[in-house]
Image 1 (cartoon, rainbow, N blue to C red):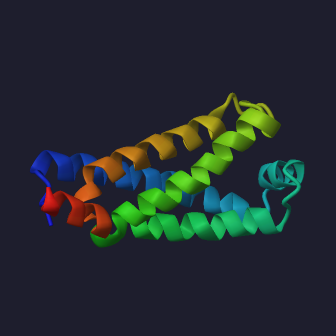
Image 2: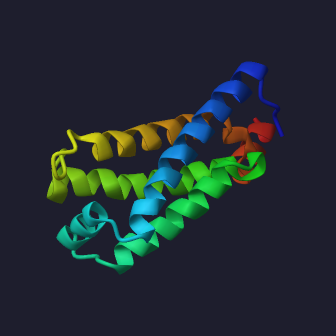
Length: 136
């Protein structure tokens, strides 16, 4: 397995913490049934199970991002969940939801891009990719 440089490690950790922070801060709203979360998932036709289910997946993704050994998997899971959020904003919800100025859409983009960068930095830690790089 390739080791990360100090700069790669620092950048990865900053992004992992930022993305996990974004995911974790939205959990309160999802799990308590905050009005905005209920509105979003009602509009998507997925209330309450979509709200609760996505919250559980985001909790798992954030925990995976906080452990170096599982950070690439956490990045992949985050990218999957955020892809759904981004597509929902672009097709059903709109960029701005309930006068938020596009904040939720921006957070989804930030989490997706941050996770993509973590995945690129830590790609050698993904078992199948790591084996490929060892063969090359």
